Image 1 (tube, rainbow, N blue to C red):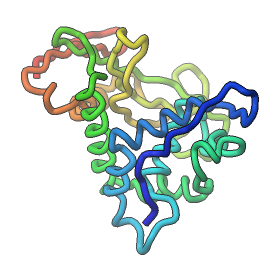
Image 2: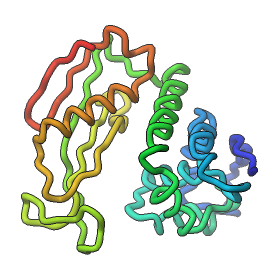
Image 3: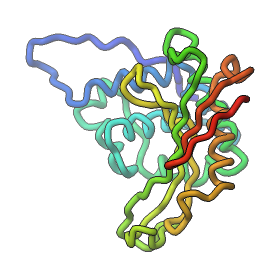
Length: 236
């Protein structure tokens, strides 16, 4: 099996040689390793392999996540991590291998393990200082978002309520004004013609969002959950 330890330190100079674009992505990839995300996803998916792997599934998963943070909207865009950055970020799996990871290996039976790995990584990060400073309250925004798709051969793509064509996922983010952004907690893939205020979908996403929080934050949790233009206070 390939080593999934954290990346080696990168030496930085300002002499104009060895220039690397998107170099900051290296920190995101290293974060995935240091919080244990890569290792735990690998452990969750290990039984989907019949023999040794060339690229650990946790590494491939982290590469995909880093690419999304870099603006990628398709698997091919993970190539942004390659090219002149391969000697910084390491070699990447092929597009076929990445497709197989999300289309076959992370199935219904293994998805809970991946979710648990994400929750554990968040707990590790919060434990060393990345936790929100909200005075005990957590604000979770749940909103349906249209994703435009110009091809009708994509699974779930359908006409939307805005007379466009695509998908209508429901996403939950933890509001983090202290870091000028938010943390992605959970999401539910849905057809393009799914409703914005489908109660059953909101309940599923809210439960997934709460489960993704560190265990230490769950007892007597005070949560303000905002659903589109409606809000609800939950004492958990």
